Image 1 (cartoon, rainbow, N blue to C red):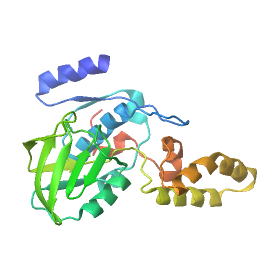
Image 2: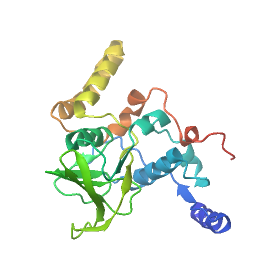
Image 3: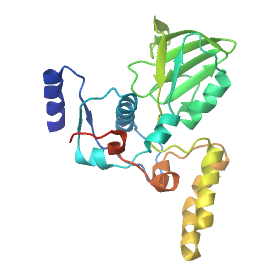
Image 4: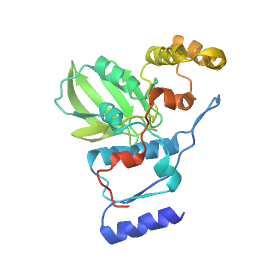
Length: 238
């Protein structure tokens, strides 16, 4: 609450949009439902830092020091689409999966996308509303935001920015399974057996094409030298 007040005061004093970076909960256990609200808010801020659009930031100590993906990985998981751009919808689908998005029949919240013929719906963290891109062949013909309730396209837009949908990215399920098995192969002795037993269920899901919701516990496997939000700043004043 103190951070929110400080961010509001700084917004009034500076005329810039000052946001609050809070901590998020890591999901280490099995869960049927996982809320990623705080994670998506953090990803929105990382996107602004990456674009150089965050001159002032208020952060809790835990939020600032929590581990996240390195800046280079974040940059490689971002993309911008604009009208008239040539790109294959299938290739864009592959990019979205690797960036942590979930494919569904109908977009209902951040971090989801749907592809129906030549129409791509996507809701990137940081967007106020999802975007619908209509393709003519491999060319982006028209784009606009749409309403989640009615699913009807509303305001036309010229371009939009896609950022990652998760802080721990493994790519496709097959890629994640390969990385986890490579990690297991490096272990020795009893530790290897214990880890193999703990990871068996997750590997079964990945081999079947599904991604477990609790992949946060493998952050150190994916990023052996993980970064914090401080790595996204260039000589910051604290």
